[in-house]
Length: 340
Image (cartoon, rainbow, N blue to C red; front, side, top):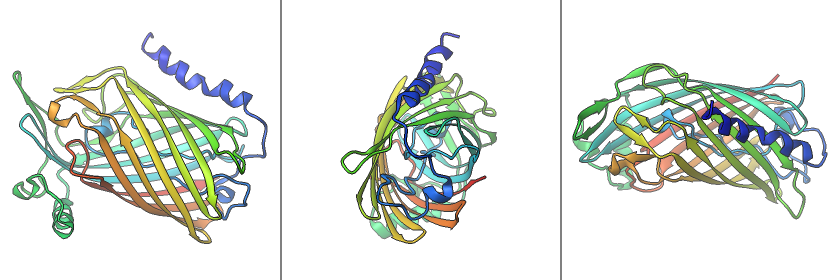
């Protein structure tokens, strides 16, 4: 009960924050939110809500870029997204050579004109995969270091840590991931001289099958800003942190707290189509093994297409910024959002 109380307080802070916010016009549906925007709106279609899918990262609560929009009352919003990541990390005390596919279904519903609640149900697959050849090709084309990837067998799966007590492994797996509860409140609509402001809280519940999630709960809180820079150009930024209430799993030791920040730029290139460039940065996820305790940073390049007034398609390519010992090599992201 003591472990649940701080997380409940964190999410509960959103309710009074939303109630004291100034009254504004009714929040848009997906159709109006992601269609060509009027000059008074301080946010666009973005940003893309991409979570890190490195195998060890996908076991924990990970914050992601977000904007200030919430669904319209009596019109819940749903989305299906898939992130497919390829990872190769080789060190003296550990190896992470695997692919992860995380497919998630999310439903969000408004509890006021400025606040919503959501439930995310992920399905996770972890195995050897088929993207090793693609990663080798990209490294060759761009002249990037491969971290001895070319010496490893394509399609291999190995997630292991070696210490004085022996060897601990995470096997291939498929099943339910950890459920994520969330709530978001728009605190300020923004104005010509100020950005829109939103507060978001998330709670990860330990519901995953086998070794696809960690024990205990994770709680996170983040603040997001958005601003119209020019007609059709929008900037986003934000940051926050997460707390892990259980830090050990199968030989891996996670940090108790973790910081996170993001920035994104959106250009509405055509009617019904936006191009986005995003970057995010997170403090170390792991305390042990030491070889994997580095900072994590990614760049996302993608687009959002309106399929109709109530549906949209999201696509993105994700790449780590430099040769890092704690990130996926690259990932592919796709999502479809609808309003009911």
